[in-house]
Image (tube, rainbow, N blue to C red; front, top):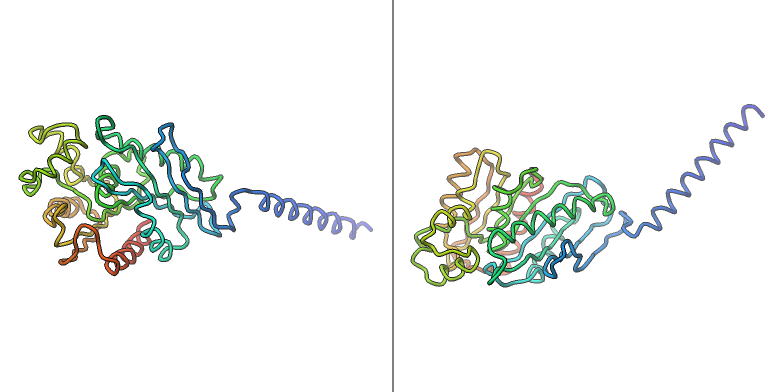
Length: 283
């Protein structure tokens, strides 16, 4: 009996522990073994501060997190614009959590850097939720068009805690002082609404240009541009690439000569594959 009793006691304790763990997992609304989608999660008090959360199955505290920002000239657009791209990206990187966020749009109010502050607010919120959602605090940040500029700007200049491990920009403006823009009335009108200052205020426009914000601590950077894009020309990436080289920052530059501002479906899929490979390398 002196031998059998401890064995029986240990076995009973182990069984009870396993049953308790199974019960906790079953009652966890964010059971990590099950994929979960949360639509329009509020991460701030403004009605625009909402995000769609895509949590993969079998996640853990090592699950990487990708945060995406839509385009729309900073004053329009919605996170739903990226739904098709998220489907492609999820197929390429099924083990990653994806956060697709909205931000306050520029207009009479909400001038730059309001949108940047929304990115920080979202990252703070997700990090506070990471134990509940069973994800890591290792972030990749990416965006399309205006969202690309926001992603680059936050990663280069505003990410004080250095949570962004890699950044992605697809047709994102990088240099507001590009000669192409200085002679483009449409861009000057759009940028004026976003920046809240005329182009004569070159210091403000320079300070909002990612190409001028690169430092030696910038994260690895992915870029993609189209040769037929009349909104964000190929020349807009020239200074950024040189700055990344000067600071020894790993980067990948993809140029599609016949693509416009909105990539065709085959190129979009090809870009998603390249983005996934790049993110996996550095995130």
